[in-house]
Length: 209
Image 1 (spheres, rainbow, N blue to C red):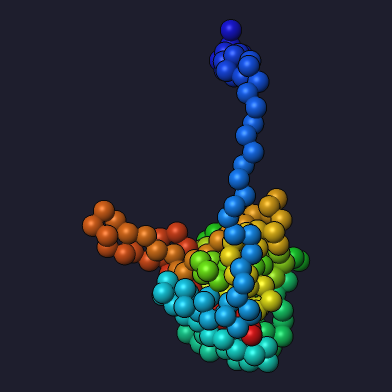
Image 2 (image 1 turned 60 degrees about the vertical axis):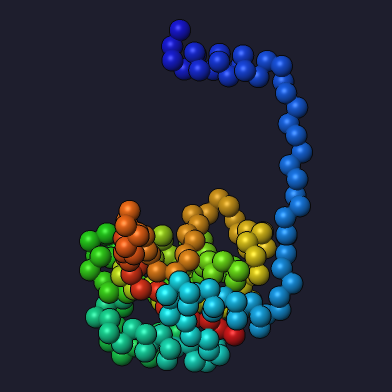
């Protein structure tokens, strides 16, 4: 008997009495009650607690806000589907490294050589301060949001939910989801915080109210 056959036989034996599957209780909260203004307030509080930079602006102020946040970046990567109006201020096209679409996928080496990345977002959870990217054209591949050291992420107020169950209902679970709660950070056995180990060391969130 092969290993595969042995394992399958063990599974069949364990399930031979066909145990009934119990109903799973759904007593947790499925939706929050906070209005749009309160959701933004909670989100800002959580993000700042995670040591992320946060700016709440009107739509027309997004370009200048992104420009200021990228002032120190020599180059930055943007997904091919990002709203070009947000980058209309750029006078040096050589600073922008496009990824995806007709521009092709940048290598890890190329992404590592860029100083920052700018993306939009799919949905954000206020209560946990979690921003979720789903690989849509304005967010790009997971790699571009994980390799550069500085991530500038734009969040629209209509995409902010109060709690996680609301957010999950808006997402396609077959897409590659990236959940971001502040800059990348971890700690060693002595609880020394180290940033930038598994993703960007710096996170700046631009919230469009």
